[in-house]
Image (cartoon, rainbow over all chains, first blue to last red; front, side):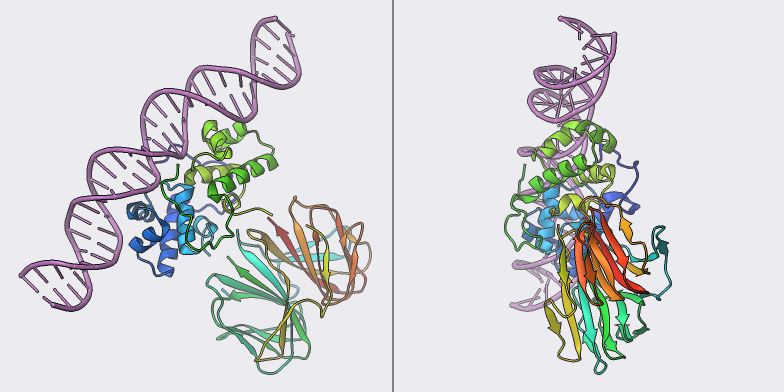
Length: 198
Length: 198
DNA sequence: TCGTTTCGTTCGGCTTGACGAACGGGCAAT
DNA sequence: ATTGCCCGTTCGTCAAGCCGAACGAAACGA
């Protein structure tokens, strides 16, 4: 199977415990079940032998990139979702909290709110809302995460069952693939919204 | 080489013209040169035969995931950077400008400021700065782009040779791999900073 | 009870990816 | 010129990925 051992060297990707094979094995099975495909059906669509797929999901073997590519195409997902570790929940960082890095040159403070997971896409919105009926979002595509930093005003933001009240500077992140709301509590409430999807 | 043809089926990943092999070939070479490694040296670090690497970069063959993984580890990059297609300038969107999507349910307006390029990482900062000496940033790693949305106050932001004055709600994006500044022009100037690196 | 279908796994074979060694070229020191 | 070293490519061998076919299990209807 493996003729070499890539076990040493500094791991940039968050060391996935069992190496790439097991990671891909579980990823493929996860995506296949999410797509409601049988092993046989997926193999047919990907134009690979189902024996190949069977062994792959069993964590045996060491698939080639063409095999992997064919599977990703058939599953309708980017290849990277099969090769990078999975991830989710609500987290709030209040204005003034969080790890701050100060500048020596100027009065300048930056707070790291969220590091970007490998391979995610983050789309950036500016939101301006007025009090009244809250905006309830349908869940987006699975794997979506939203981040909101309130700029001005006040707002109730987060999962529909447990939204959080934000003041200017507050930050919240929550799953975007579950129902969630944005309800302005003050006039001219504005925020930055980042929609992150893998 | 390829025994199957994954050519059909709807392509979710933005069809990379020449299939996964060529894509990986150029990605590996690009990352290797970025890391200033010789082919021989990289092969040694990845614990793979240099012949394998040579053919891989030539666009021949069909590497296994273990080979790919070992290379990504040795290069110090996530695997996804080798399997997704690759990809800067100043752009400003003033508050109130830009494509706005309104909600039917509530007084809620979202403006798309920047779609995320495939495979980029975006790290999210909250910035609070006071007037005085501007904060001049050293250029970051090549391929970095920064985005700033001013929340409160006023600031001079952008490339050091041509910064732009921002008011609350204004958005700017500029290359992060060239010198750039953030100079607060009013007390308690705050902003959201997204650092995007490939 | 017996076919029929679909599921996922297991079994030989052909094909090919990965390996090490050998090769030719470029460069610097001797 | 010669030696040494590193570069990247080419070649033959061997292991293993991929394949199709055969297999047992489970579900459904006749």
